Length: 208
Length: 327
Image 1 (cartoon, rainbow over the protein chains, first blue to last red):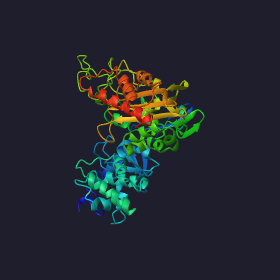
Image 2: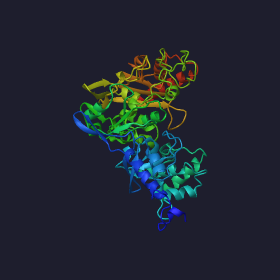
Image 3: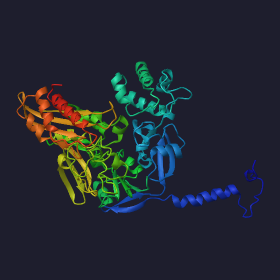
Image 4: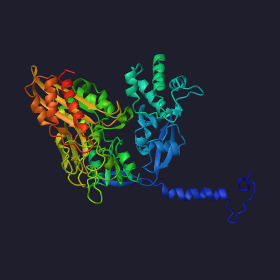
């Protein structure tokens, strides 16, 4: 145990403040002025709140759980999930709404988390790949990806799984062409498309 | 992405008031699929984003004698699923279903699609809409222009208009309604786009503190319309050529025609030549080919894009045949 971790031992620092307490105090005194409430401006004779450009309170509901964050308005939903909530299933690849690796559900619709600002996702139900497993049991879509060897390096897989779930919710009995079109927003650079199509067809057959 | 301040007004009037009187101050955030990418690449760096998604007046669709009113915030996905679109405006339904990917269609709004910025790679790399070298050379004409304009490219603008949905909307005779500090105005969609002559102009007639509120499409009973686009990839790709055609028939002959191309010019390109070639004719492979030849008669390809002339010709021909029920 390090010296300043022992609560019984008096602080050796001359100020009487342990290093950990100092860091805590420092953290608070630095954080407070950086997080500002909204400024109110008059627009068409009515007050409208203007947030930022510094950090502002942002509340996100992810996988059914509410999280209170302090973020600049420019932080995307993807970066909020990964860098601020440590929910890293959605992957940051192109960051331009082109590859699908960051696919999440927003109010049950598949969206690119990189194309949404965290601040505008407030009040929405965000669902990530992390919520699909039940205990140690894979979601049927995840199991079908395993069964059909539908990933190689695996980096695109979480986005594909989430996009597949959203697709099958809307198209429970898809044709092969509907599968190709319905998953066209996700890329696999290893080229596991055949396995992915087989996986989706398998889930559709089982009616999951 | 540069830092910005953010507001979510609840009325159109508040939103207009929060926008700036000149470009560069504020941008409208609707679906955000184009804007956020432009901001990440520092092509635009607004000081304020005005999120208009909480403005109720901009939502929803309604049908009336005037036609079909589509609120500006309607997403491409919701519009593609709309029963009235599927029944009355099949060319629009096709264009919507071909656009981007499901994830984009779930976010992107119709008005955002109409106002999206060009995909020209010089523009997207921060070199402007009319990119020039320091020595004044036209970077597009002398550079990588395989996806650029083959019509309307005599001036400095050589990018192509980016919406794949606009040609079908123009073919159906759609109008736009906008609101700004001086009130409302209405513009036929075909008049909304303009070829910029200087770098300070945009490629459309949206003013910096205006908002598109709705799109109105006239009733299309008796209109036979089709959309056809040619891409390198089967899905989720910017097209090489788009054609939309709307016909009214008198018996087996064409009474009136609209032929609109996309991805060939800095604006959606209406072809009166093709329209003239069709009027009074039956629709068959021969008349469609003649109209398609007429549509591209004035094409002037750049150094790398002569292939687009033939692709656009094929798109027009196939759209005519599809509209006429012959394909």
